[in-house]
Image 1: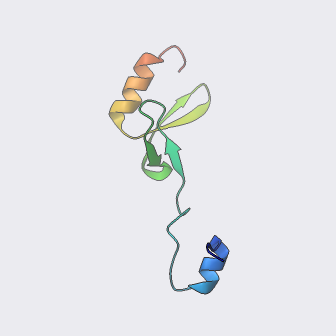
Image 2: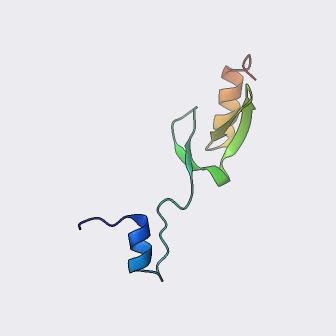
Length: 69
């Protein structure tokens, strides 16, 4: 087998922790950058949480879409 699934990797290499899939990435709606959800800047818009790579992107998005918040 050329590629091992995550579970097969853990069984084959139990001492090695897989970094892939260890954290969810979210897309910044302002600039399109993917950022780890844990470290993203957040804003609630129409009951939905949006994630941003920086305060600047968050503030720009909110300014352009101020009627939605």
